[in-house]
Length: 97
Image 1: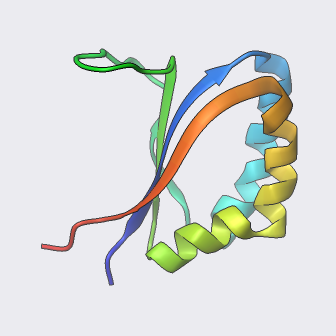
Image 2 (image 1 turned 30 degrees about the vertical axis):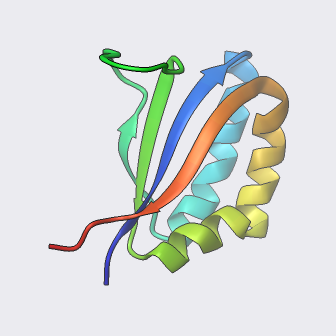
């Protein structure tokens, strides 16, 4: 099976409130075997536009990545995130060699 990824670019407007989202999303990511490959960290824009924070989360399958996003656990966490951040999030299927 091919892995899948959440690729997120975020602007966080309230760091303290966003921390509550980070605590809450752990339940959904654990349930669907999401694994952080990138979580913030230094970045250098080479082309186009970019938000200040980038995150990449790996899932075992595309179905798991979608189910995690749609899950009640993640939707509850998302409700904490929406008022305090602006994000672009795409779920993408990996390339199987």
